[in-house]
Image (cartoon, rainbow, N blue to C red; front, side, top):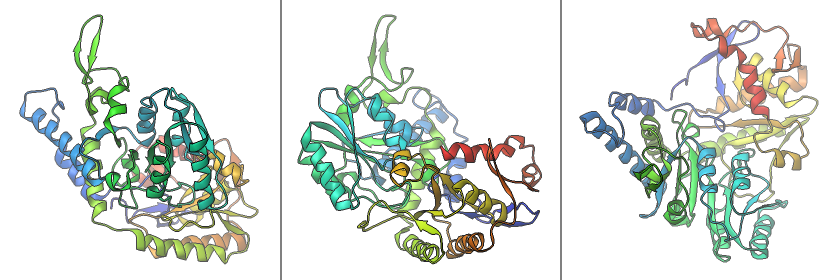
Length: 437
């Protein structure tokens, strides 16, 4: 994995091995994925639009990646595999394809904004179901909502990006089928941690992001049933999405091409396929479960630390734990962990404002998330750092600024650390501020 042994500067001038506990936001690329991308980059031919050998090779690589991604996600023979920029892009694409007149889109209040906001743009209406204290009761509420009025689509997360709790997809599909409703799964968090089979589960549509699944930035995918996708107007109007154009009219293509106008992201598609291939050979569940257990037990033993869960009866969860520390703002905790311990994680409301409001946490929480490169030592180091914070307080004074929480005495020089002109990287507190909202 790239960056596995990265050392980062601390506020007091020392350095430490970086502990990456922010996999839920963005996972580092796997070395095999980077190698695959480097092998493809020399074939810089125009995908689907050239007669030269590089163009033909690039076109073949792109379609091979499409086929591979479909296979890894258990796509049905007639499903479309459409490459997008990320999960948000894929969800917006599907939102534009939900047919009018077939009912609302129904979703839960636990969702990431990427699975809440796009449906407000759909031609149909939207309904948000408030979650109950138990998952079992929440599913009853979902069924009641689907039975109360027609619903075209049930849009649900595969795993919470806040707490890691996994939803029972086959049971959810069975509920939806009883009411003639299709199911969309936001698999951005689930796909890097669990195998997914669309055909076996019965899920109709699925979206995910490459950058959360150990591929570089900039590629995602929407996989699902062809009829809605072929009947809708193209997501982007432009070259590649057409069969014929006149000055007065246009005949649009069917299939994935219909929604992939412009020059395709060949490197992104190939990277995503390579990452999913690698993940299929690297089962994570047992390793992550052990790390999660260690962290929950360790944090649970510290006075004033509260871990978050949506439901009391969730049978499964990926390696994500959200928590609060009494007396300390989440942003301060995140800044302290970075500046004094070399630990990177997420603080804020995790693009899940309705859920954090239900938790009664208007300022958010802190989230640690594990991945392929995580070690037991990482969980133990976070526990020790939080225990030191609660027992001794931070060594630095931290000020809340327009750029987020910052240590008053910060000796970190990112330009020197990277050995290059990265003046823009000095604005990293802005990134923390952006993530907080």
